[in-house]
Amino acid sequence: MKVLWVVAHPERRSLTGTLWEEGTRALEEEGHEVRVSDLYGMNWKAVVDEGDFAEEAGSGRRLFVGRAQERAFRGGGLSDDVRAEQEKVRWADVVVFHFPMWWFGPPAILKGWFDRVLTQGFAFGVADDDGGVRRYGDGGLAGKRAWVVTSVGARASGFGARGVHGEMEEVLFPLLHGTFWYTGMEALPPFVVYGADRCDARGYARTVGELRRRVRELAGMSPLAYRPERGGEYDDALVLRDDLAPGRCGVGVHRRDSR
Amino acid sequence: MKVLWVVAHPERRSLTGTLWEEGTRALEEEGHEVRVSDLYGMNWKAVVDEGDFAEEAGSGRRLFVGRAQERAFRGGGLSDDVRAEQEKVRWADVVVFHFPMWWFGPPAILKGWFDRVLTQGFAFGVADDDGGVRRYGDGGLAGKRAWVVTSVGARASGFGARGVHGEMEEVLFPLLHGTFWYTGMEALPPFVVYGADRCDARGYARTVGELRRRVRELAGMSPLAYRPERGGEYDDALVLRDDLAPGRCGVGVHRRDSR
View 1 (cartoon, rainbow over the protein chains, first blue to last red):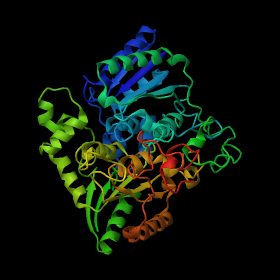
View 2: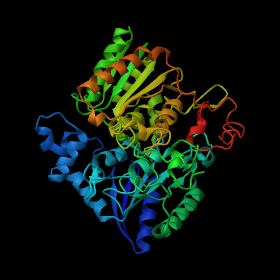
View 3: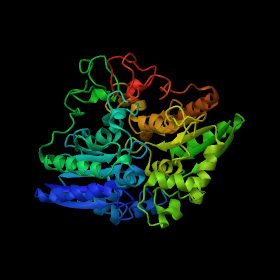
View 4: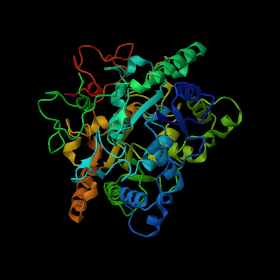
């Protein structure tokens, strides 16, 4: 497989730095091809602004971000850094997003990667031959898979089904479902390191071992069973049919195997 | 009341620009004091890096972001831009976060405001006299309230209780519960503009009218009924007691009035 490893941490000598090194090495040992986007190392620009689509912006027209991104994408006018990342995504079978969880989501530098790279026309806002919108299980990145590797200071129990921080996969719903699945990428079950703030040498070794084991299983790993938008489970108002997860509400209903 | 309005949009001539202008004007008409952080206008730095705590970083020690932020916070060593924002937050009774929803969350420039401003020691990681952690309903920002004003291209039905995009308040859980409530701020019910991509002149006028009405009600608005961490609803493992929302799972259980 071709794997793009996108990593966001300001300190190379961190648990994230170690896991990134060991994870990519394990992939190569399995015979996979690996490319890396080290966002801090690249001094990645986090913020969508007129520099991303200079020609569009120079028109003086009122700026609609999605449309400007799409016009620039189609006309080859996106900035070099964005085009380079899009090329890596095109190349990849699996994209790994590796980050410490800050405020229950990715650090701004990685959020900015999604904002800037997954442009309209490339990752979403694409239609099929009959004009239908390809989204949720389909889209510009269909056929690829995406994997979150993250770490949190808190204990695992707090992220359980009834833990105070919220169930981990539901906390990550904007990423797993709203970003990966939305663009057509299957979301693999996240690899989460809990108690990362209190990780000693033995904890490091155990965590590295677990990551390596998961990496070896990556090719055959089953994705989360999110429901496709088109396929009859949602009605024309994009609401889940009454007979599926009957009587239940909330983001959990969008998994076929939800409780 | 003292209201800090934090806004993140690259185009002043946007729906967001109009709502920001009208919303802050309505606040002033009601006699409230208003300060604004226009993140794009300020050219706000989104990314946590060594510039935020230069003295800490200069030590050559391995960087632990939370600890470095806290040491710099306590020693007055945070960068000027971060200290200025913390002072505004200290001043405010209500903080408004106003943004277009990108990938089901705030744009990177605003995510970076949370990452950089809500430092350990200031907003979280604070203890009371008996050493207990003040968090979820308590914390460095206790007594304040926070309000999301946002816009999405999609229709409202897709963000309903069983809509394909996920229930809006659950999609915003990392912000409403994991950021506001975590630091002690009560989360007010978000003001969401749906169908923002297709908003014509009449839609603009109607939306402005609705925002102005909500702003007039702001002082008396009831917050979302999230459960406090300490108060007996969670056990020592931070798991919700069996007899509360019995048999149910997912982020919805953390609201007292959840279905």
